[in-house]
Length: 467
Length: 160
Image (spheres, rainbow over the protein chains, first blue to last red):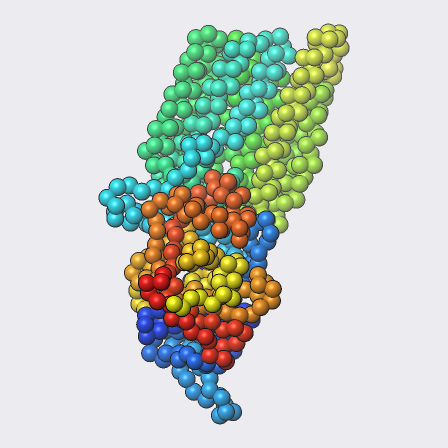
């Protein structure tokens, strides 16, 4: 994989012509490069560039000479933008201009190289260059006879390799399930704490296992436009953690989740909890792991919706109720399920080329941009409709309508999708809003149930359900 | 003993970008825009391991040049300097060894400190090697005009 697209000599000259001045460089007789500023007249049609011979220096005709143009714009406190450079190589001849009065140096271009961040964004350029970094560390290791690896502090590495900030996807449905159970008069603090911790381990196991299986199957290697929300943690690709270490970490998380699940089964067990626990484990591990590979079969969004919606929420609910099920937690899980699936759905947009390359049939891989945006609008609308219908049918309490306050966030994401569909780094801001949409919707539903529980305590006669 | 002309040092100390030229195995010059850092004796540059081809070229052939002009940083002056020198790659500790240059670097580019705090976002970008360049010869164009021969200063090898 090349870090930057190849540029032929003509394209290189085209780019060179856009710079106000150029740097002519050659290697002098002492073996040192010498550079001098010139104003070259570029003619891509004849593959040539001409410039006045620099005074006091001899431009050699027996070796390659280069012409370089570069541009950068410093941005205080931000770094740089508008970074670009191009170099064109060729041999030169020295002669007279047509007026026969002055000498001229003519470079006939043979090859070119360069980078323009408006064509290849810096993050993509960096990602495409990862194999070079790995080769560098391999060479250093071979030279020193001991492994030399890139490093991150333990905290940063833990944060990155487990994708810890995404735990909100678990905490929201689990705490909501516990809150709904509490509103039904069932609450056990220790069981609630164990449920949150156990569910968190399931997600951490899923996150890490996802990196392992996507690396084994080549999906993360094929993705050159990862963002902070998509493309996996990249710790394996960057050589920060080995595949084996990640596989061990995923196993540890799943074992810890399993142990907590067994404790909950032993202390708060029910058939419903056993079924939900087993289903959750299958959905979690089967998300990327063979033979199920839900995400490779176009079932990833559904798996995430089911796993981080009804299974998490109902699981937390039945732990508290000792196995009793109800429609209310199920209906409340629908908007959460849809919004969490939409996080994945939007995050899949920049990954779609890499995913398609390895046969991962996500919805953005299968459908047109227009259909994908329409899908977002339908699913987001369905999330709000589920709450409204739930309230109208008397299944959800009236305060859950608070979730409608997040509609502007959904509209913001929807409006940002099409203009940034092919710009992963522009899309990143909307991915962030989409994550906040799920979080805020969950928090507002929690606030709704806090109101319900508060009302039960303060004014038991007040009915917050329609009908 | 010859020294680098004072205006050239001003350029090195002020410029945000310079062109580092190295020689590839075919003898061809390859130019990279990089931030130059001057410690009063040598020119330093750093390279991420992501973009380490230049380091391989230097290991193969240590002859390099650093070319600087930066009218914005030096109040509109258009003078230009090219410093030829011998380069050495220092990569004992790619993770943190280069950070000894942070005081000079942050004085020129304060944003680097906040970038470094967020190294978790782009870990390999901050795995870097130092390029230490010992100046050997200086070509200085006071007006930046190449139609006028440059002032050439040969620096004694032992001086560097």
